[in-house]
Image: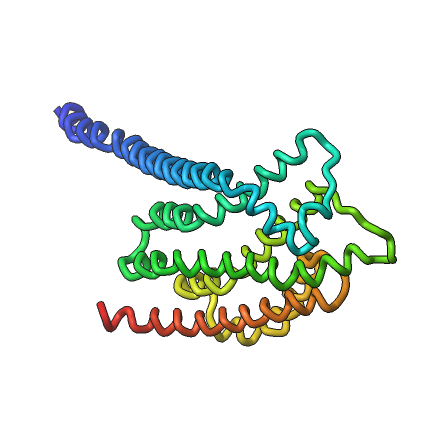
Length: 265
C-alpha cells in the first residue's frame, strides 16, 4: 500500500515537470526565429528601396557624373582606358545617389525593427530623428563636394609639378568614397543623442573627454582627408569639432528628457 501511495504521488509530478523545459526552449526558439524573420523582412524592404532609387538615379546618371566632375574641370580632364570603365563609373555614381535617396526608408526599417522593444516616447524620438539623419548625411556630402574637393584636388594634381591626367574610375572612386565617409561622420551628433537617451553616455562624460576627442578627430581627419597638408586636415577637423560640441549639447537635451519622463508618465 505504501509503495502504491508513493507511486501515485510521484507520477503526476514527473509528468508535469518534464514538459516545462522543452516548452520554454520551444518558445525561446520561436521568438528568435520571429526576430530573424522580421529582420530579414526589414532588410529586404530597405534593399528593394535602394535598388528602386538606384534605378531611378540611372536616368540622371550622366548629369550626376558631369556635376561630380566639375571640381576637376569637367569630364574632359579625365581619361578612360578600359572597356567597362565608363559603365562602372555610371553604376557607382547611381548607387551613391540611390543610397542617399533611400536613406529615410532604410532608417525607418531599422527603427521599425527596434520598435517592439521601445517605449512610446523613444519611438517618437527615433522617428523624428529620421529627417535629421538624412539632412546630416546630405550636409556631409555637400561639405565634401563644395569645400574639401576644391581645395584638395589642385594640391593633388599639381604635386611636384608633374602633369596629371586622372583616370575616370580612380577619380570617381575617390570622390564617392570621400562623400560617403564624410557624410557618415556628420551623423555623429545624432548617434551621440541616441546613446545619451539610452543612458550609455552623458554630456558630462563627453565634456570631460574633449581633449581625447580632439586627438581622435585629428586621427580621423588625417585618415579621411585625401591630402597630407594641414589645410585640408583643418578643414575637416573644424566641422568635426563643432559637431562634437553639438553632440554634447544634444546629450544635455537627451539627459533632461530622460529626467522628465517619470513626471510625465
